[in-house]
Amino acid sequence: MEKLIRKIGLVAHDAMKKDLIEWVLWNSELLMGHKFYCTGTTGTLILEALRKKHPDVEWDFTILKSGPLGGDQQMGSRIVDGEIDYLFFFTDPMTLQPHDTDVKALTRLAGVENIVFCCNRSTADHIISSPLFVDPTYERTRPDYSGYAKRFENKPVVAEAVESEKKRKSRK
Image 1 (cartoon, one colour):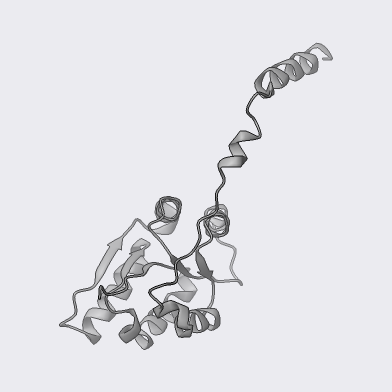
Image 2 (cartoon, rainbow, N blue to C red):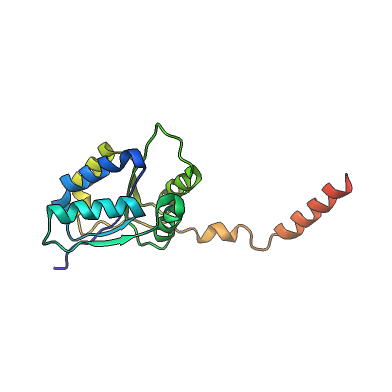
């Protein structure tokens, strides 16, 4: 029987990196053998900690750029491409993030793509202890959004927008 490999995204705001590292180390036995995608600093720190705790284990990590430098968008791209099943994103709710729009975009994409998503340690504990985490028959369903684009078929959306803009300009 083939080993179950979950594709897991790991992200943490600066004030939450220690919590995520501790959580990963606490659950390292359960996380062995899975595929990880991490934003820059977070991934580097987690991988270093895992190698110290389990020097003989080969971890499968893809380290992206730092979140504010494009790593959040890279993570979002992997979510859309179906490369991530779980996103553990330990957010700092008490600090305004300069790349807050990127964070919101990741949250939105997690919902759109129906991936398992959590933003704190309590939820992460529930997810990893769920029987579904180790159930090889469980696969998330990816929503069918094909009808979404069809809403605009045979509708003069562009023509309406151009006409509206002409009217707006003529009122000036």
